[in-house]
Image (cartoon, rainbow, N blue to C red; front, top):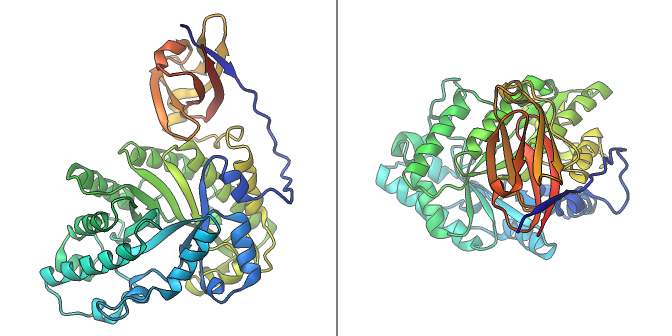
Length: 436
């Protein structure tokens, strides 16, 4: 029998109001989106103001330092889980998810590991023992793990970072880490995590090439984490056009994408202009995440400027998070809130990159008489990439069609239900329901 599509009108609720019962978490849960922040020592010291905001606004948490190697295995073969376990227990009690960070890193290692007299065989054994001990302890409790962190340097050439893992074992220390992690917890999602990778550059391309090779060799890697430590000067359309193309190429590998450590720093003292620019950066990151179905984890590296890592690492800079030092929401909070509140109505920004130039400003509508999706406004000389998603964000169908055309619904081959249709390139979306 023929299928009919009905467009469901979407209200544009962009007044920026935040009602008492509405939170980032309440809207993220509807998508669903894992939204959260790293947790620092204030949680463990029972800072109630800190904990109140954490529980009210976020559905996901990650330890800032308490799951790194120096914290969990200070003496070889002797694990200390007590502090990290407090956050895991809290998350479970409050129906929050937990990310794990991080298993294999060049930094924050105990002296026995960083300064050991290793051979390839003995260091691989120590790596396996650490990973097996940590994931064995948390098996079934942590849904995403940063298995390998920052394996590439900042030379601008996409080279591997010189560290004891790399120098003793070689490139395949990454392969081994993911293999050991999967053996220890087959259900956990395993990520490679790094910074300065959101755009297409030598570093992100080297990581792309590595992940592609890992997948070809059947190494159990599930995703990439984009740390996303940004500056207010990053608020340019060309930057985000580059990000969109970069996100798309990683997603095309069939892996998951997570924004893992987002913050947006500025020179101090902050100004209203800087705060507005910061809000724009946060807004576009969330829009990019929502526009990419494989990206459903959005983590910030803290949430209040009162306890941010930025001032001690970048002297003269700070104010990088969505709450100020008095736990008051900043424009960045409102920007995230508005995007989450109307995720389908708030289109991604008008990218100036290749996808827009090729596709034009495509518009979507539905013709009940011909049972067709109508595409208008695209450049007829170039195809428009149509993508269909279910309400869980999984892509279920796609097609390349002319810039101005009618697409019979039968060509999508979908069952009865509600779906999202997107014209990639300019963010045109519509929500529709098919009935017999």
